[in-house]
View 1: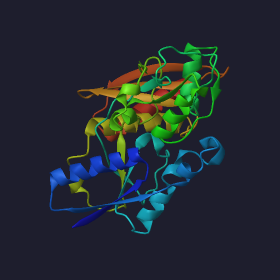
View 2 (view 1 turned 120 degrees about the vertical axis):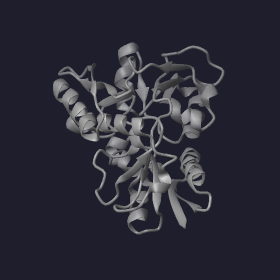
View 3 (view 1 turned 135 degrees about the horizontal axis):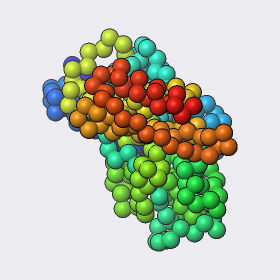
Length: 290
């Protein structure tokens, strides 16, 4: 049996795809695996914000086409990069255990204080509105690219700081660059942040994903994506949700903007033993915050 795994060609994407391949080998080391990398439109266009060029779906479109054309058998994505409406013919087959979901503040190398006389490099509206609530004097300029590109831009001396997902920094071996971690109460993470998704074709057998799949992360993502979908948010709006499970209970915090455009949060908890319960909980909180 041979499985071709499709991935963006960035170093972090390759690391994440190799995590999936290692899990498949642990299930059955006789399975032949091939990594197929490609550059997506989201990787090629770095001079404009994602909301100006089509949203984060640009990171996965080429990979979805490769699945449809059967050039690859599986693709690996960060859940936070996936659109809210996944094509029925290309379902999410499994999600990984969740890495640290929080956001991190990164200062230029060798700098130990936040100098807000310079702008913060950030293209995430979600991060911007929450950071500005903590630091009203902060200014922002767009910053896109892979982790290494953003760190190089930051270290050039033009920026006060940037913000990145702790999960990506850990997977890339760059945890030492973290200057401060924002707790979810301070900065609600992006929907699905820290979780990897495996996308495949409808009807595809996926027993080989047993060592990769995590039920708690799956339930959390169902809650979070239901919340964002109900509010009509995509990947670029400052709408977010973070869920965590304890036993058969799930705790969900949502982020939305009020009538004045200011961010506010609200939390809810319930027993959520089924997928339908998780989806209903996300919808309930979203409607309460609409």
